Amino acid sequence: MSKIAWLTERPVAHRGYHDMNKQVWENTLSAFARAISKVTTPIVMGILYFVVITPVGLVMRLFGHNALTRSRTPTSVWVRRAPGARRGDLERLF
Image 1 (cartoon, one colour):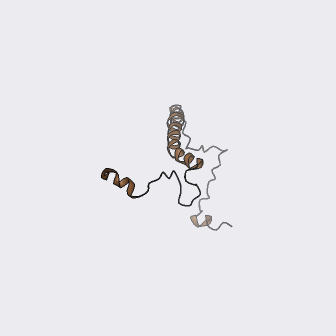
Image 2 (tube, rainbow, N blue to C red; image 1 turned 120 degrees about the vertical axis):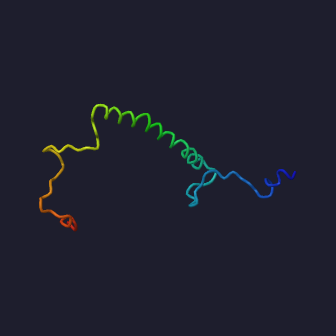
Image 3 (cartoon, rainbow, N blue to C red; image 1 turned 30 degrees about the vertical axis):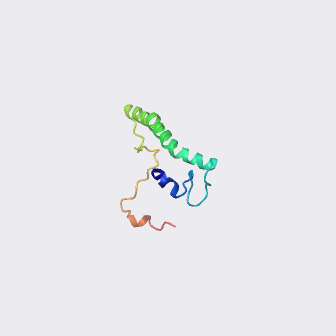
């Protein structure tokens, strides 16, 4: 009897997933869904990253495309600043 005394000294109950703001009630279907999502979301996102995003990026780099660079063609959105422009000219525009 003394081996399980720690179990009977104070009541122990399964509380499920809940938050301190009591937006998710304990032991409900939404609490179960949140607990499951804590495990499945990182797994799904990891699979998405390593199976979809990484291979697409590798294929793009293989063909010489870098998505982070912008072209400086005449149709570009880049606007050259005037030679005498200062940083203070961009403060308080309105």
